[in-house]
Image 1 (cartoon, helix red, strand yellow):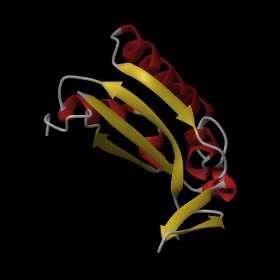
Image 2 (cartoon, rainbow, N blue to C red):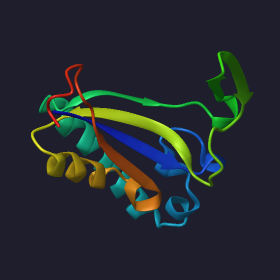
Image 3 (cartoon, one colour):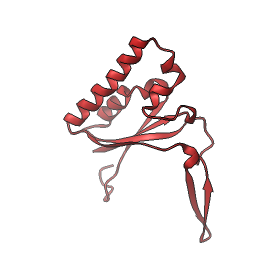
Length: 131
């Protein structure tokens, strides 16, 4: 089953990789920062080799967001972030793995999980019968 791993972060730290721009990461000793960066590289190598990584992408700064709503047949577009929150959706990965536990295990290994939040969401296929 495919799972969407959503990475949330504070837009003040925007850039790729997100975790490497957080104040908490930057406050770590260099050897610990190097270890976390190595952990991220090893994770991407592992899930690429296993076929679990489907796709991933970083998102642009939330100030570039446009939200579209249609009310009573009239579309309205607003600028900027679509939620009032300190953390915004920063990027995502799609993994294809055997269980929600494995998807959560992969998410927990992203260094971003140490400094912000990752959300794990199952992706339904067009039939929706897998739930």
